Length: 415
Image 1 (cartoon, helix red, strand yellow):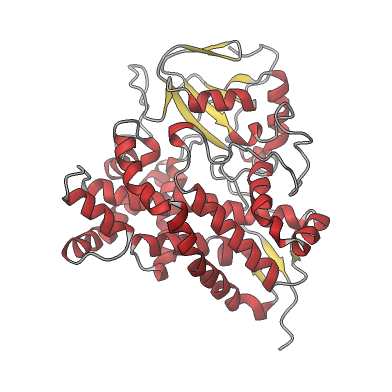
Image 2 (cartoon, helix red, strand yellow):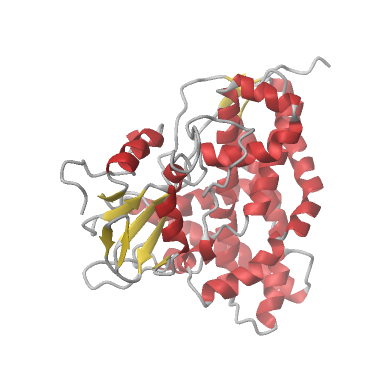
């Protein structure tokens, strides 16, 4: 296990959220494959890997996987079995499946996220971003999370699916309920699971009529394509279609929310870099990659060990839970020069922000495009953009890590 003199890390505590990087530095140096506190109180502990090399190794090695391994001593399902609707929903998310089901689902959904498809979406994303800023421009201030970073990607996903983007507040409410109960954390109280169970049923009630409608009259959207695949013998059930829709509206958009919010925060805290990007907008694609590396939207993902395996001179046993610390890997000095520096001209930005191996994020191309467009529009439309409050309240979530609110101010239009 871990070095006896090292305090066991509990990455789910609220005090970790404002600056997880100081914890990463300590364990990366002192105990890089660390036996810490598990989010599951029934487990005696969980492994956490902090170095870039080890993080890549775990993500790419098929001896680690996302589907829980059955253990006689503890329940390992993503959520308690008592909440059957929610459990069934989460169990059908692509991110929790392994081959052959993962391969089957991902091959169908990934067709909606090809470079050509995403390139064709860019004008629509620009239009949505402009529309959101139109609503706040005259105010001279906004909550960037709630009024910009959140609605933009969720509207894009809704339009791609074939749902009504004006229902985004409903989607947000349901998505947060599922996210609060499914992301790895210390065991939530029963009311959190109850809200997730209710949200799961409401998601099903929302999408089932749309699926039936697309079966009768297909349209040019992702739900129609999934229904067509199911009806042509790809063994895709309506349950899996609903689960895929909810997954994209939950985890599928939250990465981009945090990319936009934390990317903006990094720029505002580094005014020279902000000025550089305003002067050289051609740097935006590289700047977005550096934002993902510097303050990773998803800080941690988990795997189960499917066999005994040694990582970093530690024996990880079959059935052990492993936390992969993406945020730590992206600031590993053994991999990146001056990793604590936010440098949008950095030439080597091959980060781990979208995972690796078969579970590499299928929406990465879309997230990159949305981040580039959202920040371009923000910088072009809002002169003198600045933080209205330096005291940032962080969401209590080490998985989808980001500010709960981000209040900014800017110069009002003259006319």
